[in-house]
Each structure stands twice: as structure tokens, then as C-alpha cells.
Image (cartoon, rainbow, N blue to C red; front, top):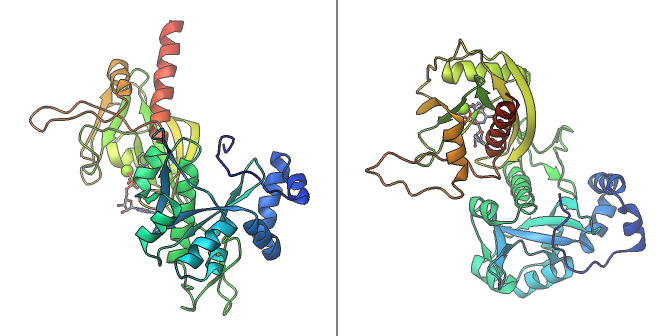
Length: 344
Ligand SMILES: NC(=O)C1=CN([C@@H]2O[C@H](COP(=O)(O)OP(=O)(O)OC[C@H]3O[C@@H](n4cnc5c(N)ncnc54)[C@H](O)[C@@H]3O)[C@@H](O)[C@H]2O)C=CC1
Ligand SMILES: [Mg+2]
């Protein structure tokens, strides 16, 4: 939700405020901006832009020590670019992100061709790694910064048609690219991934990859193969990674996950029958997978930050932080277990 997004004082035209007075109108307006080049340019000229430098977002720290995503009005950014010796019209390369509830179109731009420190000085902020930005920004800004980077990354990697080899051209909103030599249209892509918390009724199954930070365990995850349903991916991934056969699936939620590239995470709870719980780990994929009791999971959830895990001692078990959908699955499982036990 964008309800709490900080935007600079609105300079909204009457038409624009009429269009965006409620959710349906706002969504239709965003859709229009994707199709109408002129309307998109007008919205950009009265909109706000946030910046990246080679895909690292610009953040600003307030006097209270809170990190924010600085939003620059079109004219201000044009002025900054001119002062840095760039043609201000580069602002028009901005990519549409959304329209805020305060009726402002929101765009982002990568200024990677400019001197990083000079931009930081002009804007009063610092370009930081996406992972750090995602972890430090307040809830409603983190998905925005991830979405912006994903779109900019997609444009940077799709400048040429994979069929003709000729350059592709983007529309004003940046919602598609076209190869004019053969008419092929390219749209931004996410890879669908299933993430599932497997339970045997009393315990849940968590796993870790060798690349995870020490002591961290998460739910099982895997990319969908071409032509698979989500249920088929889930059954296959659980079978492949831990050698178990799932008997039921329940949808929980979804999340865009920007690391390392755009994935569309679909989160589900799954169960195996209590008589079929012998784990057989695929060590090509996972370092370890095992069943955890409710008490163990409660203890892991209590750790707000990753624990210090000295090398010479067994690690304290911890789970992904609250912005990861794996955390939501684990918390829901605990709530379900507590409800179940209360009812017994
Ligand atoms: N948001 C969250 O809570 C969590 C997110 N994840 C994300 O889920 C994703 C998938 O999990 P994994 O266990 O790594 O998947 P996985 O079990 O499918 O194994 C990854 C392997 O699948 C292959 N693969 C097939 N299609 C691919 C594609 N479209 N893109 C990249 N590799 C592909 C590659 O060989 C890759 O090494 C990861 O990117 C990870 O960041 C994982 C756990 C928690
Ligand atoms: Mg996996």
C-alpha cells in the first residue's frame, strides 16, 4: 500500500485529481499512461522521480536517522542534470512506477552515466545496494524500490530483439519495448517461483542452501518449469529437494522478490501424511533440511536480527526476516498450531 508514501506537496491539475480520486480511477489512469505517450509525458512533468545509479537506489537519512526514498519533482531533476553538465531532457527516460494516492505519478530513472558522488551531493543522499535499501526502508517504500530496480534492470537487458538482433524501442511509460523490424513486443518479465512450508501436522520442514547466512533456515522454494501448474511445481520441488510426497496444498500469498533477479514468489502451505516424513535431502540443492517443533520455531521467530554465530559453536537457528514471504508462511504455521492446540 502506498498510503503512507511521503510525497512533496501536490501540484495536481483538476483533471488529474478527478481521474485519481479513488482506487479504480487511479488504476485506470495508470493503465492509460502505459498506452498514451502524451498523457504519460504530461504526468511525468507534474510527477516525482526517484533515482538509481547503476541500479543502486538513492536513499536519504533524516535527522531522526530514518532512511527515506527522496522523490524529486521533474523540474528539480532537470535542473540537477543541467548543473551536472547533462541534457535535462534525460529525465524523459524515466520509467513509470505507479500513481500515489495523493494523485502524483511516480517514476524512476537510472543516472548511471553521471558521476555518482556529484549526484549524491546535489540530491543530499547516497546510492546504496538494493539489498540494504530493501532491508532499511519502511514497509511501503521497500516494494517500490524493488519494483523500480526490476524495471530498470529489464530495460538495460532488453535493448535488442532476440529474434532480429535489432535495437528495441521503449514506450514513454517504459512498460514495453518493441522491435520495429518485425513487430515483436517485449514486456517486463518475472520468473514464477513456488515457496512452500511443509508440515506433518505437528512439525514443519525448513531447509538451508550452502549459500545462506550461517544458522538461517527457510521454506522450500523452486522455479516453475515451462507448462507446469503451481501445484505441479510444488509437488515436484518437494519431491526433488527432500524426497517427500505432498498430500494437500493451501495458498497463502505472493510477493515480488528482486534478488538476484525478478521472481514472482507464490507461497503455499503443504502437508505430508504423518506416516511419510522420512527426509531424503538432495545435497546438490540443499545443505540441510529437517523437521522443527513448534517450540524451536517460536524461539527462531523471537530473534529480531540475525544472531551472532561464533564459528566454534553450533549456530543459533533463525528464519528470514519479516519482509520475506517465507517469514509470513512460518508465522502463519505457528498461529495455526496455537489455534489447533488451544482447541484441543
Ligand atoms: N522471499 C522469500 O521468502 C524467499 C525467496 N527465495 C527465492 O526463491 C528463488 C528460487 O529458489 P531456489 O531454491 O534457488 O530455486 P530452485 O530450487 O529451482 O533451484 C535453483 C536452480 O534452478 C534452476 N532454474 C530453473 N529456472 C530458473 C530461473 N527461471 N531462474 C533461475 N534459475 C532457474 C537453476 O539451475 C538454479 O540454479 C531464489 O531466487 C530465492 O532468492 C527463496 C527462499 C525464500
Ligand atoms: Mg530450491
